[in-house]
Structures are given as C-alpha cells and as structure tokens.
Image 1 (cartoon, rainbow, N blue to C red):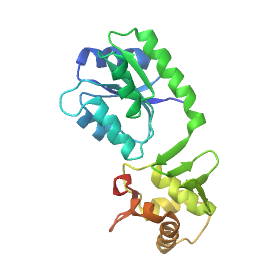
Image 2: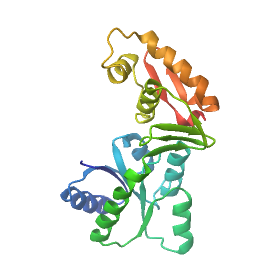
Image 3: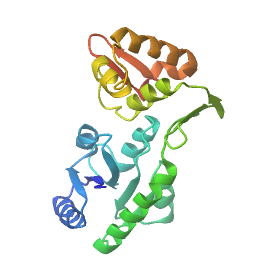
Image 4: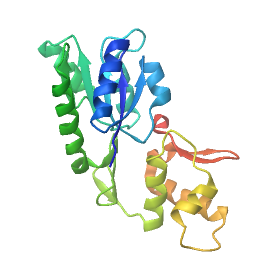
Length: 222
C-alpha cells in the first residue's frame, strides 16, 4: 500500500528536502506552503500530515485543532524550531501524534513517519465528540452506547464519513453500497438517510443534503 503524505511548511527548502526523501521511501507526497493551502489540498486519501508550527496566517497548532474539531483523525507530526516542554504539550493537546524539533535528521523523520503509520491500523476509527465509528468492528457508538445499524446503513454512513471533503451523489452511492442489488432507485438512498438521521440524534445534523447533487457528512454542523 502506498501512503499519501501532506507536507505543510512555509519554507521551500524544507518542503523540497522532505518531499525528495520521503518520495524515495515510496510515499506519495503533496505539499502546501500554508495551512490555508493545506485545507484545500487535504483529502481522505492522505494518511498523515507533516505540519510546521510557525507559519504566517493560521499556525500549525490552530490548523491541527481545526481538523480535530471537525472530526478528522488523520495522524499529525509537528515539525518546529520550538522544542520546549510546553510547546510539546501544546502539540499533543491539540491532537498531534508526534513532535520533531528542527533542525532534524531526515532519517529520524522517516523513522517517525513509519512508526506513526504502523500504529494506525489499530486505531481505525472516526471520532467526533462522543460519536465513534469503528471501521474494524463496523460498529457505531454514541455516548458510549452502541447504535444498532443495518449493514446497508453502516455502509452508507462509512462512505459519507470517509469522503467528507466532497458530495456523494445518489447514483454513486447506489453504485457503491448497492452494487450487487439490481433495480435500486434514488428514493432508496433517501429512505436510508432518513433512517440514519433518526438513529444519530444530534449528530444527524452532519448528514447534509446538497440539493440537486447528493449528500455529504459535514462535521462542522455539530
């Protein structure tokens, strides 16, 4: 499996060094010079973010905090010249998974990246406050209580959550969730969304209908 990594740093040289060496290790690399640019480039295909802390505009800490508040659990490794204990604690408190001080050894960065990615299969979950969807057990819990979902309801919810950055059309949902079932209409999709909303309580607000296009999961609605 080829892991896709997003590098976010406002220093061109650092981006180029990281991109060159990580690409040589077999990773697929995307680069951004700011948090604002990173938000536009980040997709559900990315497996990890290498994130500078001190950037103009939105800081790395703020960017990470924003992602976590939206329910995005992508692993984040901070890269920064600030290496005091308080800085490290701040990084972890906003959702960082690791912390590397500049100047760094590229071998150390590669080792840390591989170590964080290796841990991820054990934490294959989407978490939004008290809402937890476990992709391994295929179970949803809200406020630590298991929510009974049918196989189809789970598949619809998982599809929307794993593609949060875009709208999923009803046609695409049918092709993905009901691909082995003939004669499914778009109305069937709407019915399942309605059933899901009834089971999700306040989190139903995240299931957004984009009129004329389809549905998306928008964590910022919570």
